[in-house]
Image (cartoon, rainbow, N blue to C red; front, side):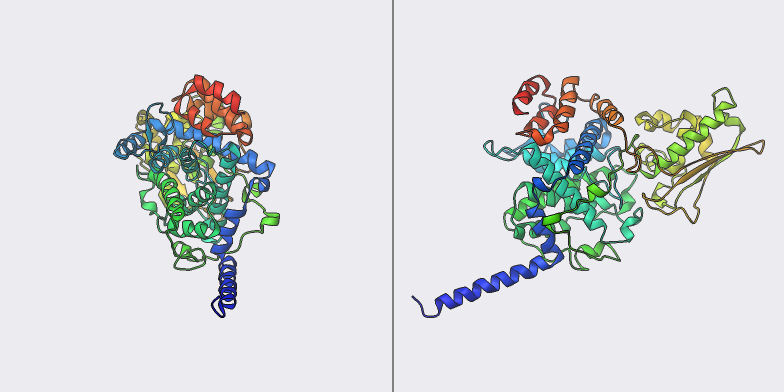
Length: 495
């Protein structure tokens, strides 16, 4: 025995404890502790039910998104990658990719039409997380089955991390001006969710967050272009990659969430706070639901659509149910000042999805908005172009650029001096007025049926609604690939 060895070992052990306590006392350490420590017993009934709705909606818009041009471009690009381990590409029976690129391609599909859910402070929470955890769940060995409850927990950890990070900045409570939020908090949420699914310890959870932060960020200038859907795909892919690298003990700054030069680099008023204790954890999703869109466009345009549709109903009452286009002098749309959604003359589907003016005119002409509203023939029709020329935006001082408080008022001024006006304070689908279960299912069925057979579509609905009871969540991937007949019989055994 070496003299003093026991005492030295004891001192080293105490020093390690002290260092460990120091890092837990940091915000980054606190996050890592919560990510590692949350378990299925922490999930409340409301969190489970709300997250199931988010999952179902995200799968539906992702499946519909496989029909878009931007999706086909990234799918073709990703074919250059191969691996012994592969994951499902949604809507494809015979095409798979390595998990990282499955997360990327499926994430792009989710946001390819701007049809995915939105939260407050502003971000698209589900698309950054769900493709990553589904792709990762398929990478585990056969003997290590990932249950539906495992998937639900990881998904909710990813959603929670995003919401908490957004609340560290008052600036984040407004509709963004500089960068697209999912590229920052979505990447971090994806990393947290994948770290949870991989059962990483606290030290590796910290590294996963640190690595993810170096992948984060994208300028808002690429909104309304084919690049914007890649923001979600990259968030899913980069978060998964960060967790995988952390599992290999790659290390980053262990105070990434505490420092102005860490996550604070993205926000001028960054003020990080610790999370609730595990003994009485309170989920943000318990406190506020998400908005689920009825048509594929920027969330701010949904107030515009409802106000314009209501104004149209008043107009056509006195004109044999036909919009009196020749009698309209001008259209005034009162909305917050959001520069990247102020597009008076959109020429592509992506620009139209980010145009207050386009949605106002389209809803006035048709009475409602749909997926088809953004087809090229509808974007360029002469009646819409004529109405766009008569449309102007106004930005009242009390109309703040926040998804929590904004409103839209549409006023149609007629040539005879009369005016027709209507206002929307909360559109149907907002978290204050959530979609009924029946309408959520109709949206999913309409979207998924474009790609999958009816048995697979119904199988996804039933699986998601019973996710906490599913023993092996690979059944969900089977349905997503279109394996309907064989998967149905397998599902009966797993539920």
